[in-house]
Structures are given as C-alpha cells and as structure tokens.
Amino acid sequence: MAGVVVVGSQWGDEGKGKITDYLAQKADIVARYQGGNNAGHTIEFNGQKFALRLIPSGIFSGNDVILGNGMVINPKALLEEMKYLNDANISTDKIMISDRAHVILPYHLEIDEIQETRRGANNIGTTKKGIGPTYVDKYERIGIRMGEFIDEELFKERLQEVFASKIVQYPELICNAKEIFEEYKEYAKIIAPMVCDTGVILDECLQAGKKVLFEGAQGTMLDIDYGTYPFVTSSHPGANGVAEGSGIGPLYIDEAVGIVKAYTTRVGSGAFPTEIEGELANQIRERGHEFGTVTKRPRRIGWFDAVVVNQSRRMSSLTGISLMLLDVLSGLKTLKICTAYNLDGKIIKALPSTIKQLNKVKPVYEEMPGWDEDITKVTSFEELPENCQKYLRRIEELINCPIVIFSVGPDREQTIVLREVFK
Image 1 (cartoon, rainbow, N blue to C red):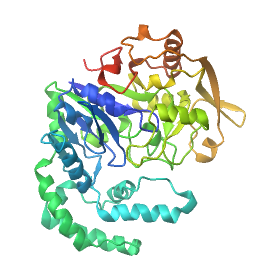
Image 2: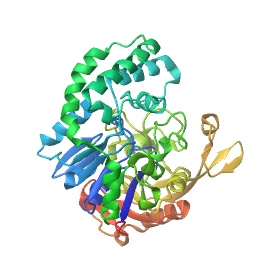
Image 3: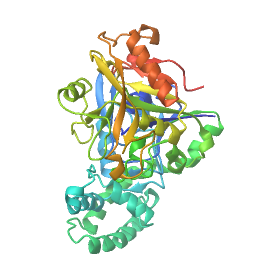
Image 4: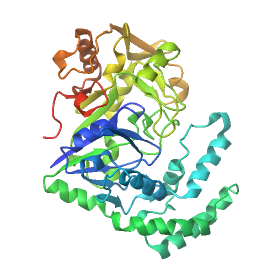
C-alpha cells in the first residue's frame, strides 16, 4: 500500500495545488478529506490556469477523485465547478462523493453572514461560504449528509425539520425551506450517481497496493485545535485529519509532505508574528501573485517562520517538506528566518494557545544574505546560488525535516524533486 498526504503547513495558500497536480501523475486515486469551497487552489494545465475550490487537483491527471466524508459540500458550487471543467474539455466522470459528507445549504451561507455581522469588530474574517455553520450542524447532529440529500423524500423531511429550528435562532433569514427544496432536489438528481461509501473504495485500493494521494485544504495553522484559535477553520487540515475525513486508518499513511512557501502568507484576521508591511511586502506580494483564489483579497506577507512550520511538522508527523515560490525571494539583499518567539522576555519555540499571548510575541530573527541570480531555470539543488542553498539547508536544520521538493516557478517543469515520495 502507498498513502501519501499533502499538507499545507502554514496558513494555507502554500502551493498545495501544484504539488498535488505533480504527485497525482504518480497516483491511482486522489482524495480530499476536509473543508469546502472556502479554500481555493490554482493549477496550470495545458497552458491554462484553473482555480478549483472543491474538486481535487488530480482531476487534471485523469485520476479517480474522491470528496471525502470530512468535507462540507455546496452542491450548487460543485456543479458549477464541474461545468467550468467540462467547458475546458476536462472530464469530471471520475468524481466520487462520500455519502457521509455534509451538505451546505443556502441557510448556512446566510447564517455565516449574520454571525460575522453580529461579531462586529471581533469578526473572524470568514469567507462566508457557510463552512462553519455546516460543521456546527454536523457536531450538533442535525446536519444533512449526502446520503440523505439524494433521497428526495428524506431530504425534504430533514430540511423542514432543520430549517424550523434555524428560523427561530436566526429570524433574519431570507431563504425558505420550500424554495431550497425545489432548487436543490434537482442538484441532488445530478449528484446522486457520484455518491457512495468512499471509505470502502479507499480501503480496497490501499489493500490492493494502489497509490493514493490525500489532499488537504488550507493549512495546519488554521486547524480548529492547534491553529491560531479562534481565527481558524472548522476542521483539521493536517495529516491528523486524514483518517477522520476519509474513512481509513492512520497506518495507511506512508508519507506526509508539508507544503510551505519560502516566506509566509496569511489571509484574513488573526495573529501573524513575522508580518512584513510597506514596500517590501508589496514587492513580495506582486512577485508571488499573493491574492486569494476565493476572496481575491491581498494576502498578508511575512518572513519564514520556523516556529509555525515546526508545529506543523509535529502535528502531521511530516516526512518531508516541499518548499514553494523560492524564486520570489531572488533579488532581496537580506532574508530573515524566525527561529523562536520572545514572550515577555522568555524565549519560546512553540505557539502559545491564547490570542492574547500570541499577539504579544516578538519574532526572534536570524538574518541570512540573499541572492541576485534568476533561479527559475535551475533543474537541481546544485545549480542554486550558494546563498540560496544555505537558506534551504538552514530551514531544514530549524524544522528538523528534509526538503524533498522545491519549486522555482509555476510550471510543472519548475518543480525539482530531491526525493520521490511515492515508493
């Protein structure tokens, strides 16, 4: 058996899509295990850029792709994404959806908006895609799952039952159960043939020795337990979420590859210890095209934070790192790496659990000389400038994890593999 998981190891937007696309060429099946259409990934395929939010990147390699039970799925958004791919002559015939995945419905989106408005200045900065409210329903045990959604009679019954309680909690709701049912029962008819017990399929594939690639969304610093709470997502983006979100056991995972940028970015609110502002941040943002796939918001920019990546390594038992957007740093005279935090005069090497403390930490930096050379055409580690090599080696030392892949541009050919992760 061969199970490999690709894990965003910062705050998301690390470049998982590109690496998943690359590794999918070696896999038999690609499965996503958490999140919804709140997170996007951009893939370059046949000279075109594609922005996906729900469907795993393996769709471009002709793989079977799975939307696992840990996901929350907006049927309307899924069908729109399928049409988007079909219009580009990319087949979506191999999509399978877990019958245990929860369904995002219009009232979830409205509730997301209402909650953010009620929070006022303390809003979390959600993408307002209904993700959090759907996960709340899941854990309150009132959510509607795909298996119920495709059973028209059962869907109608459950929808009426759930909506009756929602309108009491949120009298501001504009949508109504009847209109939702009439619209969404048609989506269910289209989706029904794709719905199955995907956990059984994954188990059979792994038992047969097939190669399975697990794709997470977002990043481990947005983990509901270990992220910068409460400015987090509602699931487990790390390798710790694979078993829960795909229906297979943790011992199926042979490799966990952490995807990190050569610097750090974050979208939305929340603590960001190594944040850079001003002209330097703008320069990196423009060179790295750092604008959200879903929100289009400019991403916040920061120096590489070894404390953050170390925590991600620990949480996901990372066996290797894929370092992305290394080329963006070319031309910077001096680079900084955060090696620890200073909290009230005490040096710490882990993220504190409270936002109050996290907002007080000061990064402890180690400075390294940059490089001027264009590295977008290198094909090996040895071709990198000496200072660039030293930068990568220092990162490996600080996070106690080898770099197995690094990227010097958006194309597949600009992906340099130092060690194959699929055995």
